[in-house]
Image (tube, rainbow, N blue to C red; front, side, top):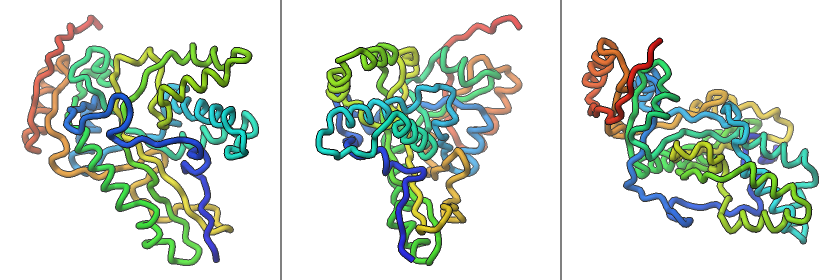
Length: 306
């Protein structure tokens, strides 16, 4: 039985005509030594430490409905600029929306930031005032993703599962660290809708290098200073298969992907400065038991009356 690599949960439909970057391309390349931070609740930290893994979530679960909007821009631009049928897969608005939805379901994001301390981020990601902020580096995040993609890429997964006639298997297509670009999305949308200006606007966006999936957000979020770990998965299946993942991807659980990390991935932990003392002492005891450095937050946040 022959195999057909299908584009469910895959980049395959959306990647033609696009130019991927690597860590050191673009106008503002990421320095591997850049320190990055992630704000999360204590139980998420405990899961990260105990199982030595990072959780990546599908953008389809995010509240921001503009997630993945650059996929639409890229698709429109490719359709406008293609005169030789090289992007014939896009024939209608429904085709663009289908590609958008496929990629939002098959891609997974872990959000980090350059901001070591931020009232906005503590307020957003530590609603119970007992959250924590972990630190690492771009290099460590990229190394974890490189190892994850190598161990679970198409070739590796084919060698494990593809040689068995009839088996379907999931695989990792992309594992990358990218910095989010903030733009006036409403303005871009209005420009694209303007008569006679679509081609020029899309060309302008090409000059700005909006190519990467899930790296474009509205300027309203610029305070986040976000850096993202991004994983994109694919599914290879026999022609008659319904595409079950079977047991080929224990690292994939519904809307989440879990990426293994080494013991030294987390370099330090800070506790929400608003955390009540008795809870802080319990968290600090847990951190000390796991040999994690504890850094105090420099942000002073006044407790608001309840």
